[in-house]
Length: 82
Image 1: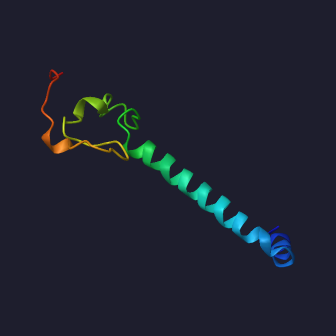
Image 2: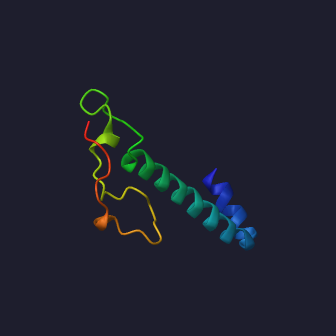
């Protein structure tokens, strides 16, 4: 199959950018999915030792990928302890 793809790319060089961008997009989407699975507090991998991981987050923990005008170090705790 890889030999067939290489043969097609040699005969149609205009397909090379298509393969590059599709491969890059697939790679970035898999990396983002992995980040969501590992860093997001909504996802619990260990139910026995840590059943509610969102309760262990402090008020200044940043778990979003990108925030525009938010300084997480200056936030104060405004919720009760459980």
